[in-house]
View: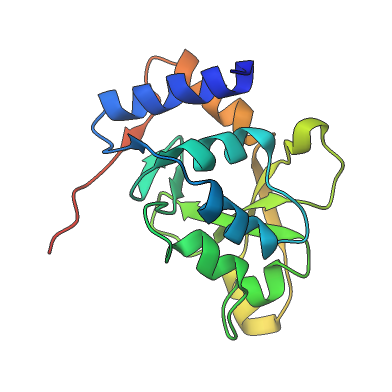
Length: 170
């Protein structure tokens, strides 16, 4: 097991300890389906997370990550760049949406695939959704984290990783 895998396992255990119903699962085929739709592979750390764990949507350090718990999930849908979606413009521009700000804002939280990065550890950026919807332009409003692995390390090292999960109302 790589050190990245171990770090991701610690992250998953921390999430579970904070009430997120994350579970170990072999998601290799689901991950392949997701990555086949992208211009580049996702970061090594995120790949480790998705390939070995399933989870509902949850908040961590300012980001609401999409759910990854079935073959019809938000990651695969967004990677397909459906017509009239943010991803219709984001994917060709080199951005892969993995969530939203945890404030309820509709901006996209994305990996920026446009820059070279060791182990594909691309930065996480926020993209203005209104600029896409109104002007059909991708405008990055800021970097949220230098990489997913830095987000994970920060969540694990801090006293308050700001993890929040709410059971859906049915």
